[in-house]
Image (cartoon, rainbow, N blue to C red; front, side, top):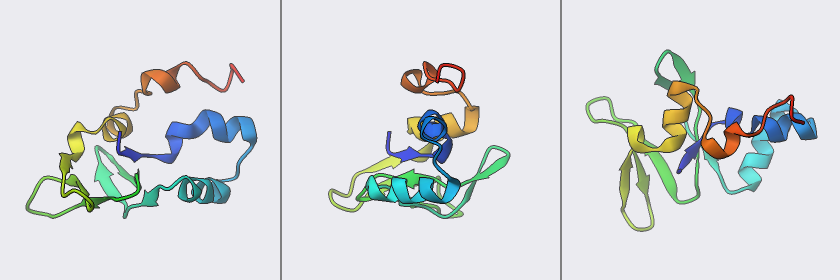
Length: 102
């Protein structure tokens, strides 16, 4: 998983009562970099990508994630974080947590 959205950490934000502004600072401290908002399904999303990666969003080419260090690329639609944002299904590790459990 290379890209993430803020909702993926919902159980942490809720349990720790972290404000929306503080969430962005925490993600930055963790080494994630925000991207510009892009259309994913019917919603505009801002992804947070791991250090060294960037989201390439060309109009005439499929979107992909590019690693600046080793020139590796991964199609965006193959990334689990992207799939989560489009389908709304939680990653199996995250699915076990909910607000009710906390």
